[in-house]
Image 1 (cartoon, rainbow, N blue to C red):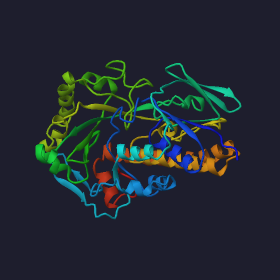
Image 2: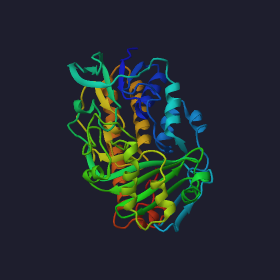
Image 3: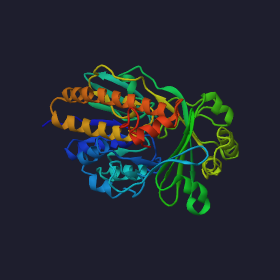
Image 4: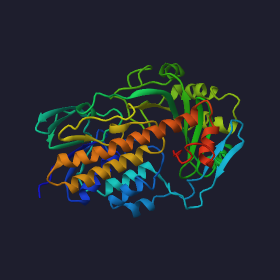
Length: 411
């Protein structure tokens, strides 16, 4: 049986799930990753892994039991607060929910450990990709080395280097950014904020802005503060992009869980946090403390999306998974979709061992409508969270009293 060598660019959850499913089916793959090592940067916070996509992907990868061992009990609890701290909604985690929470870094770890040694080639930043003809492609790295491949998969996120082979689409700024901060040992050192967040996820929302936080391990509170502001506004507040104060986009930037951006230097951290907190003047101090008492420099995460319903014509020997294929507003589905993409592509390649193009066609024909539907749900959720009716539209969704009550409001 002929096995087409598979080259995967990007060692995020989607690329690693693909590599693992291929390994389960005896198909060799190599993953090239720009980061120098698995510990090169923090991997983000909590992920809720869903019954209809993330969990089936992990079952396909043969890692479901390992995943269950990572689940943090109680973290599916959800509460909504008003700006003055009043509780608007409280949902406990009784252990029967379908969206168990794990740490992203731990999930990535079990995927990495499930692969044969040498599968991931660290420190390989892609500089260029070009077609060689006949469905083959060449990937050139920043150090001048290059590889040729029969099958190239872009799992390299929002600013994919592989995407231009298939599509001219580029991500566009949505007008909203998150500012990320963390509090540590919060039950002891920040008890009011810890009580406000509770045992799982908390959100306090208003039109155009919001404070969202999640309890992780060891009393860590991980916060994402949302603001509908221009990139110039954030530059004036003290945040910088990879190439200067007004630059927050482009392939040179560090990729975070929800977009591009970067941390403020220590000298400017307090000023930037204070400027963001000023947008919540009059809010309860236990909520604004999640910004002003942050123990990590605030990190800007601008939200970008690809065009709604993004798709491309079939290009021999190449395809995309995850954010490279369908970058959308965060709605709790990004990591789940990336893993599901990887698992479905791996299954398709295993089902068509002698016809790679048939496998890629089958994968893309199913992926395009699936991702388009999720992108529409994400846009609806974003409007519920930060639109003119916030937070009432989102609470109605949670309580089943409004249209779209079954949509996902996960972190």
